[in-house]
Length: 142
Image 1 (cartoon, rainbow, N blue to C red):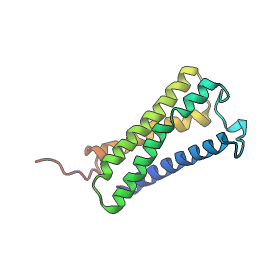
Image 2: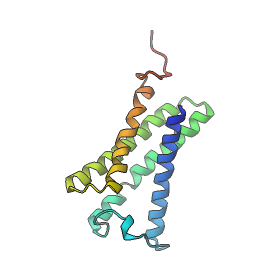
Image 3: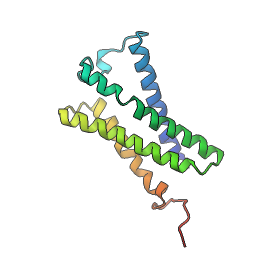
């Protein structure tokens, strides 16, 4: 696993785990989050449910990404499959959010750009993971 992929996975996955921990703590009433940090219509029950519907997908990409990093550190070749799953889940989550905000016509950079980044940054690593990039470490068939 390249250093850049490891860093991208760790930053993204740990940030999302932190996001959900803070969200859960706020929901549990441990501390209120300022309205300025919330996305549009956060108090709307449908939008609130929409946000929470991402929890399983976000956890899936976070855990598969962290497992990929751990597997790569152990020299386990299964890291590649885990990384591919993580990147696919990451792109799906980002794409769903981008589509939602675009349909609503809401382009608040604080919410739209990070989700767009979730769609785009995995694209830099997919060719190498699939064996098609210039830095691919998958041997070609003879």
